[in-house]
Length: 122
Image 1 (spheres, helix red, strand yellow):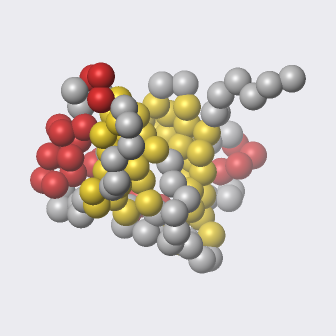
Image 2 (cartoon, helix red, strand yellow; image 1 turned 135 degrees about the horizontal axis):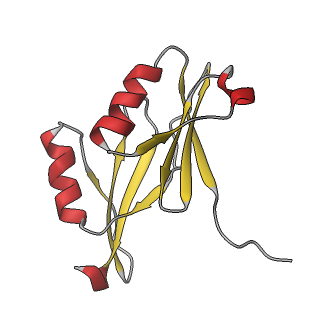
């Protein structure tokens, strides 16, 4: 028995903010939106696919700001940072750790998102 990977990560946004979330995740981050199964559409939210993983955006009454976050592996961290700056997304430099460069942002709802690149790709 073993865990073989991550299928999806879910973060939450406040109710009635789905179009704002879609504008951020699909528009600014350029993630590909995929249809939710019919049985789950009534719950609201949206799903995005990138590589073999998915990001699920759920809705709930209270969203918590904390350290929990997805970390998106990117192929050009500097370009991503410049793209986000063009959209006035505040960037937070993070403490480095061996082998990686990274930074974080907060989405419009306070969710922390990390962007990370192996140093070997620089």
